[in-house]
Image 1 (cartoon, rainbow, N blue to C red):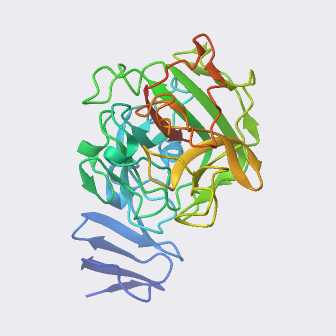
Image 2 (image 1 turned 180 degrees about the vertical axis):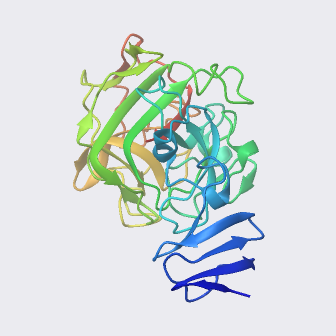
Length: 331
């Protein structure tokens, strides 16, 4: 029986949100075992645990968890803007990792196989592109480890910073300092001045980065392992999920002269240096498209749109860390 206090209602116990609520209404959700209150727009959860520790108290992104003072790396529930249900993501909250914690591991390629031999990793906001090597749909905790390729659902999840990080391939069965949490083999970085979300079209391109080429610190020290192209660390313009040059399978965004991929299925995730005729050119990805470089790990995407091996890694030289496992992290 509801209990009325002025224009507010204590609804008692329920398994779903009561209808026609007023701001300040409250009830006990007996399925999630949490109190919920109505903030005038939506039902919210009264905190009885740390942010991100359950679907009922999911965070908008990893940066929101980091802002609470939490510095423990691990799997947390992320809801974004609430467009879809909360989902698990691995969040790096260590304050000395990547220039400061709050990073989400949103796509990973294990570096041991051709992308289309298992799940093809993409930074995506589409349910038909998310998944992992060992199943479909949102990957669970067992699927989000370095030895497996996966893509998480980024719909409505905001970010301002991007890195593509190549990492050591030792101890791949679980997350540790031997892989994701260690000092990277190579990386490149981009940042936006305002919050961004991933488009929901089959193919897409992001807005251009406002800052690129920065040296990032790990463990309190700058790490000189930046990817350069034609001698420039500031080559990065944006990233995409691109169809081939003919607009297959989706005409929203394409790679320039990208028609020869044999180890990845279009649309493919790539970063790029510039647009040529409105299409991504000088691309880099999780692997090479063919047999010129590494078809299984860190490399430019030589399908006709790539860098043509005109790339190097700071401190490692030409084509440094080629073939390594790599991940995309967003903050």
